Image (cartoon, rainbow, N blue to C red; front, top):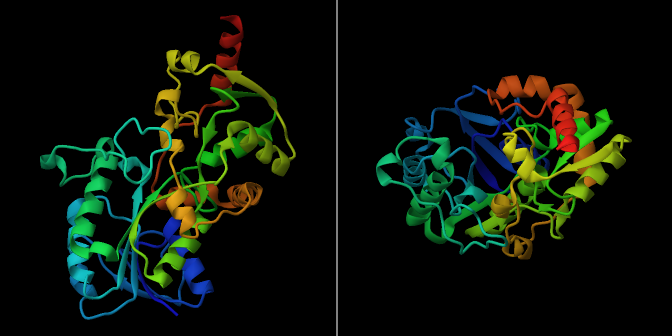
Length: 335
């Protein structure tokens, strides 16, 4: 049995980690503000507090592992590591693929150049500097924890409870049928990973007390947009006509990559969805069948998506409406 401290733990990745930890018989303590999904896990010990000024509430306790899902500023990681470095054997920090210098090269491994920013701006969160801030968080943690730090550079996460709806857009769109706009090329590759696979791997790494830095996304074999849409079609029973639209046309018409059309990045930015994951796979990262993930997400979306998005407070840019999609397809044919 592992004694686990969760910083966060009630939204998406953290929720899956807690579920998996409890199912495996681990002892879990959650440290959070109690603002999101506070009715979850009633049997789990809670320490109420804000990580920015209540870390003293953790003093005097001992856990085997801490998993930090909500660190965004280097000062937050420094303070947490200072408070916990004698209280835990391993500190797992959920970082991001976005730590790499932009544009991320295809096949980037963990040694690729990291994003940088003006140090004077590192004390406040700004989405423009999200990746550089995460990189600074990693450095702050590793400076104090050394080999007892596990930096998890997570890619695009999918699964039930996802408040972003990125894969959910394509599940809904395929299910709707008709003529479907597909950006770029059907053979373009992308990466994503079921959050439950990440959760299981994190618990394994925690049990084995393994530190280091890892790109964590998937799958092992290249995933094309064509295969993704085919798997969604197989699950939903709907196979709309795929109308492939050149990305130059989409950009000229101000279609927003990743927001209006999730999972699409222009070719010169697509390295973000094509990094090297060999190190994590060698450390035991494994992947469930994509169709299983699609089926679970589709079932969850039908019942819970709107409720979960409101509860999380997360708002995403509007995805492509059916009306705008039809307008773009008509214009593309007439060009």
